[in-house]
Amino acid sequence: MFCIQVERTLAKDIEAVFEAIADHASYQQFPGVDTSVLVEAGEAERNGTGALRVIGVGPLELTERITRFERPVVMHFLIEKSSPLPMLHTRGEIVLRPEGEGTHVTWISEGRITIPLLGRVLDKLAEKQFSRAFASLLKAIERL
Image 1 (cartoon, rainbow, N blue to C red):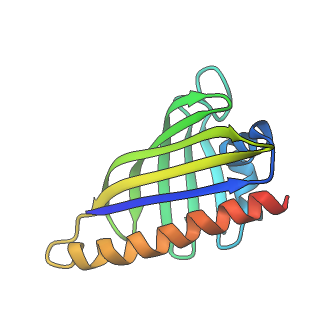
Image 2: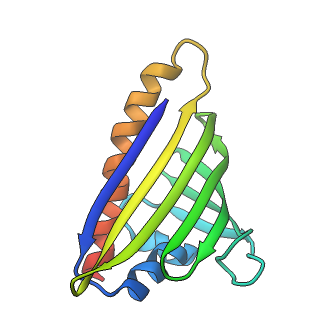
């Protein structure tokens, strides 16, 4: 099982940070993200609860559903499909809170790669790579 938790305080206001994280169209400006497409709009907001988006990072394609959206403090997501590495995603959440003049972000993702025999090894690799990717994305948001 992979368990990723990335925490970082950004020198940006909470609304700007939340908008950058929530807006699927902005993901292509981040390092390593090749594509980001909104497949289904959310119920109350375009990128809100119910939204389905596909994010491409190199050969990896993740289809994720937004399951909770409370502007500007919480966004939960579940990866419904991934290829070429199949996974069972059990938890995805991003929590923001004001901290001083900035914003503290906690990004959590948990699940497991479902390839028999190799899954545990790939979980460790995924944990390392996703942690780096989330940290890199947050650094990029701070530079916007």
